[in-house]
Length: 159
Image (cartoon, rainbow, N blue to C red; front, side, top):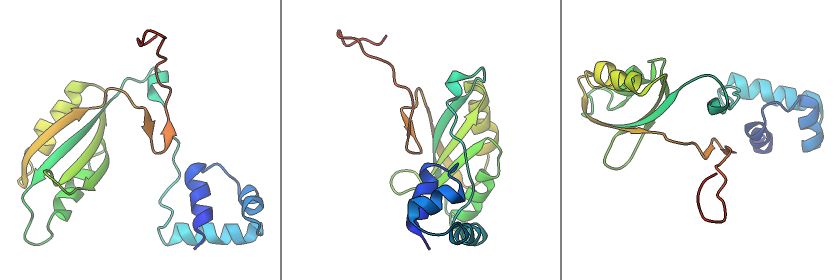
């Protein structure tokens, strides 16, 4: 498996097979075969565009929810994680070490929509003992990409 190929794609998924071949010093056919193999075996899970939604008309709220669970006898945390990640508003679910078991990243149109998700969908799950919701106020960097940060003038205040 060509880890350099994967690093290049992770940084810019729009690179063509021809561009990748030049960058890696190999034939386009080799790159295309490597890509097909990585897609087939699940090493490459998808290709995504990162959008700064604050620059659009689309209103959205992002929240990180810490979830404390009771492990299930048959599958530990897996069954509950599966139930949670199947909700369409859930963007990521991570098994964590520390005070909480799962970290759930969700997106909604409003804070109320996020609150309703927690109260009506997440909290009623039998294994969920508690939740703590943290709303994202501003993104500085996401998936390795820097977002525009507010400019600070010489007095230390934001412009």
